[in-house]
Image: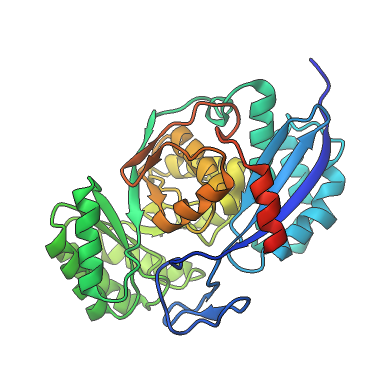
Length: 389
């Protein structure tokens, strides 16, 4: 076997403007380069599509790409990669993905830094390692993971980014006319308001199954009322993020009050965070985001979920083409897949960094078969966009 080593680690911070913002227009955000909080959702958002790309280059010139879900301040995980992770990466064998990843995690675990920006940095590097290992082996990542359970990745369309129910309903009807079978609404604006939006969308697209993302807006009594209202309407896939993401006990309480699947996962980054939720039966649908967990941890989470008889619906939000490709690889390889999240605007923006778009869209994706993640990153475009960001 030819000796392989990582020769270089490069970070690319991207901040891309687009004609349509993620999750639609709002009057509460400042203009670039500022950030602001969207009303009712508490978390900070950017008016642009921000991300961190990591490139690993082997001594034979082969490259592997990774991406962190870093929608605000991607400079922070970039510095983690440069200052803390690169010294261990350079000179290492990129084919030893799991041992190398464990060594990287151990650098900061006694300081509690398996999550947050440290976790995001680890995720980007892990994805890049799997991409590089796959290219060196001449195999797609899903084969390195033990093989694909499916050749087609089913999706749901995430978000109807319009300011009024009438406009959301019209957009839902257009998606339905294109063959879309599942749509997730980004709500959390009050129980009565949320149910009114669901009703408007249902009238416009009666054959489309609906999921609701409440963006952590409610307490247990309000979330229970919302869950009951959704359950009474029928055709509801799941209720996502109904309570504060740290409220494990509240989610246990809610899960006991409704038979509607309660979905969580985008705020968690590794198996040690997911395990208590699964043990407590606080979650009915697990949503790891590969650009926050990395491929290694996403697969570990999926195995934990399968052991608890809970399906997986990988999360995908503002990640660009690399995160999308990684999400498709794990979606193929996990045993109990529900469906994968399709973000129309993020996917459109994410194509800017790919030489060739991934085949697929709102009705699902074909399984990529090329080595590694199955994509070719346009390195010139990435370099130019990083210089402009």
